[in-house]
Length: 107
Image (tube, rainbow, N blue to C red; front, side, top):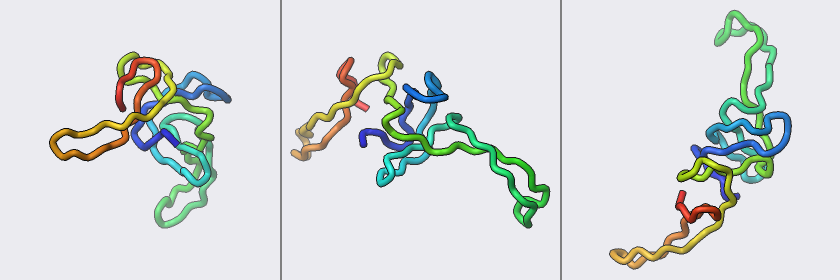
């Protein structure tokens, strides 16, 4: 998966198509992500010591990772992601960085 926590994404299919938000949580084993403000569900809760009032609470539910696309940091447009190996001259270590296919900008 090329998507990580705190990435800005846009939903490309489903009921929330066109909405943008930040990734709050990633479930790589299930190929799902939670996006801030997208796929809101209502949960009926009983009164408890934590929540003595009870009532209806709203929270984000996970959506499949194939339904979101990263936003390019340069143009704020949806873009595909590739990887590139960059060599650090001072430490002589190779690191893999994510690269926007459209502009070549690194994430």
